[in-house]
Length: 335
Ligand code: FAD
Ligand code: EPU
Image (tube, rainbow, N blue to C red; front, side, top):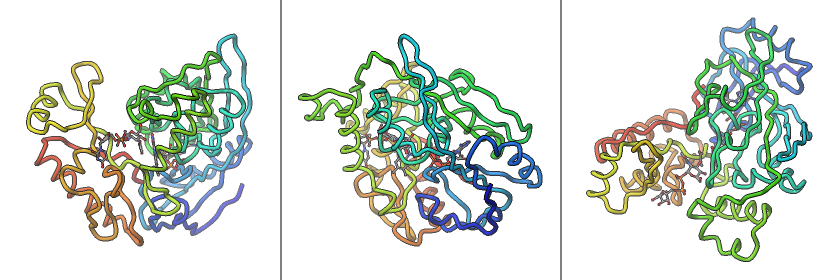
């Protein structure tokens, strides 16, 4: 296992924040797990990093960083109804989705083009275009770093919620997800509930997993900034959940407000609409700004610092609360 001292993470986080880690262990396969735990015991702080597409890093990261680079995809099991596919944590999520669709194992196509790794996908229960990971998950194999022991989690064990799981809530350095298994139904049913997909003309002519995959890629490319060209970590805030009364009161005042019912007399609001309406779209603060096509995505205009990120985030949270009485919660994980 490679161990690096003074390891630069500048190019390893999609927001492009400058960061140097004291010590970095590059994890490549399960055979290294015992040794990894032994190394981790020497450090007071341990962090796990995948593709760095949902993190905000400090300029200097103390302790041990485990950088996940393991590779491998296999058919784990075939039942009458499902293909169970297992992938190593370090696989690129988007490449994995493309591979499953091409192999004739559909079900993940709505989650195309989400940056990052397979291992991080259960951490915030990734979701997009009408599908959340928990709907396709079979199990998660995770290594308890302090105990030096592997556990298998069923979807119920993962305590999934919107952009949340037991892994996201655990103390950093507790879990290293090593493999994720997906249950992909043999009887494919397209999910076209998301408005952007319902309106997609190309799907009227041809409705296949590959066509849905292609449509999702096109929609995302038109809306979201490419992190290789403009630093960002996807949605900067979660979409807030409010009571029915609060939603109604806001709708009366702002008829174009975007939100939809999620059961239990609760509504999920489009945070992008709130931020857009409050006038923050494209307005720079230091070297960061909310994206001109998607106000929920904070972008690095070049040389942005964590201080800039915090200043803009705080200004937006305060303003949105004063205007709409809604508290925004940050989505990316802060190390
Ligand atoms: P990282 O950023 O490296 O890590 C994120 C968290 O997961 C950290 O807490 C880290 O410690 C933990 N972690 C990572 N790997 C492991 C592991 N193997 N074991 C244990 N913990 C681990 N998210 C969505 O849900 N839907 C979207 O549509 C979406 N769109 C995005 C679009 C863009 C342009 C960008 C930049 C981001 C987007 N995201 C989206 C957020 C992000 O892509 C996902 O959260 C992704 O799963 C993060 O993967 P990663 O490997 O980069 O994780
Ligand atoms: N909107 C505006 N102005 C904006 C942006 C959005 O008015 O600048 C309104 C529009 O009316 C739009 C609605 O907000 O119809 C919703 O916007 P969009 O479809 O772009 O989705 P979102 O709610 O902003 C969520 C996820 C994304 C995911 C998409 C598609 C969260 C926090 N974000 O964004 O996930 O890709 O839906 O499912 O739930 C991420 O988590 O990083 C992420 C990108």
